[in-house]
Image 1 (cartoon, each protein chain N blue to C red):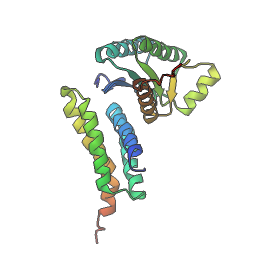
Image 2 (tube, each protein chain N blue to C red):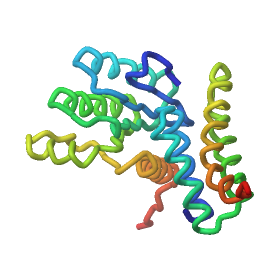
Image 3 (cartoon, one colour):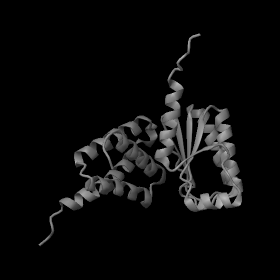
Length: 133
Length: 94
């Protein structure tokens, strides 16, 4: 768990990193957050990343793009990202303003995000049935 | 709150939320878990068992330098969970 100035927390739990953004970050703080998270994916060999944005009441275009970038960088580092806790007003504003999180998976809350990643990892571990010819 | 795996998943997510935020809102989530458990007739022992299982799982993934912090967070969260049980067992004064 990162106990910095409480702008964000990054908690490692098993194969997952759970990052929570506590306050609206400015552009440089978002970039720092992105770098920290991508670094920790390699450090802990994480297979999944949850970004909890439940505390945010605004998500601007730079933040939305940074979240998409994090998800893509995480994917390149072998981890799946899900964004949890987008508030109703934030979702409304994002749609109105034409912002989106691209193909990044989203979940209602932390519980939903953990369930999603557990399902993905379970499917990845289960060997595929081969159909004989 | 139902018992079993769903309850454990729900408790796990709420406790991780408290570890991340450590604020009144995350404690309130713990309080609500306890309140729902009382309403739905879940015993205190069952809830303690869920807490223990979740706490053990989280500790297994915690770095040694953070053990004290996590143990402290677990204690304050569990006290909130048990608050409703405490209220229902208090004898009225006079």
